[in-house]
Image (cartoon, rainbow, N blue to C red; front, side):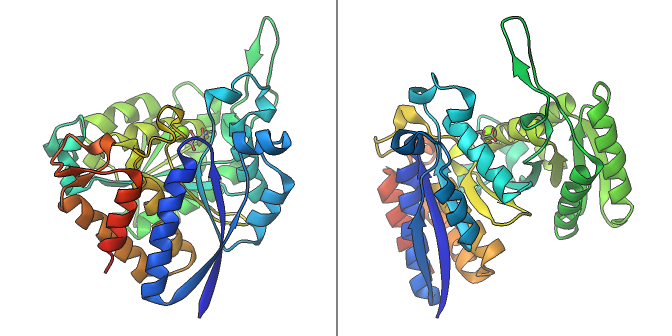
Length: 354
Ligand code: IPM
Ligand code: MG
C-alpha cells in the first residue's frame, strides 16, 4: 500500500480546528482509495514562539523537507503583535516559504453554484467564475533588500531578477496551456521600473507559448476588472504583493474567504494552505469554515500525490454537502438548511465522499 508522509502545521487561531477536519477527510478518502497517510506535526507561528521563542524552529524546516507534502492551517494573532518583526508569527511562514524555495503560489478561485447568493456580487457576474491567481511567493517587496525603519523613515525594496520572473511566468503559462489558454499578467508598469522588467520578461516567455493569449493589466485596473467582469480571467500572473492583495479580493467572488485553497510549489517541497488567516476572533468557537483547508488537502492529493480520483471525490463531496443545504456560519444566510459547526462540516463531507 502506498504511504504518504504529510507534515502537519496547525498554527494559531482557527488553524488547529480546520486542519483537524482536513485530516478527517484525508483519512476517510485514504481508506476508500487504499493508500495510507502518516502525519507528523510541527510548530510554526505564534505557538512556536510561545514554545521555543522562535516562530520557525529548525525542526519544522527539516520535517517539511522530509515530508511528501505539507498541510498548513494559519498563523498569527494580536497576542504577538508586540514582538519585533523577525519573531512574529508571519515571519515564520515567510521564512519557511523561502527555506523551501516554494516560489509558485497557485490560488484557484472557483465559484460554487450553490453559493451564488453568498457573494456580495450579483449572481450573473460570478456564475461560472473559474480563475487561478499565480502569485510569485519568495521575491518582490516581501523580501527585497535594502529595507529598514528608523524614527524618520521606513522603506522596502521591490526587486525582481529576470530569472525570478521567468520561472514564475513559465508556471503560469504551463497552467494556462491546460486551461482556457488565457494569461493576464498584472503589474504597475506605468509607474514602477520593476514592473517594466516584469512585463518584458513575461512577454519574452510568452513567445514559447504561442497558443496562450497574453494580456497585461495594471494592478489598479485589474482589481477593478475582477469585480466588474471576473469571467474575463483564466490565469492571472503577478508578483508577491499584488498577488497577496488580488487573491483576497478574488476570494470574495466566491462568497467567503473560507473557501479558497492554495498550493505553494516549485521548490524543495509542496505546501498547501487555505488563503485565509488565523481569525483569532472566532478561534475556539467551532464556527470556522474548514472547506478552504479541505480543498487544500485535495489539491495536495491531486498535484503532489497524483491521487486524482481521491481529490475529485473530495471536491464532489463538498459540492454535495453544499447542495444539501449545509453551511458554516460565514456562508450561512444563503440557501442554508442547516448551519453547522466546523466539526459537523467535516463529518458531512466525509459522509458524502464517493
Ligand atoms: C497569505 C498571507 C501571508 C502573506 C501573511 C500571513 C504573511 O496573507 O498567505 O496571503 O502575506 O503572504
Ligand atoms: Mg494574504
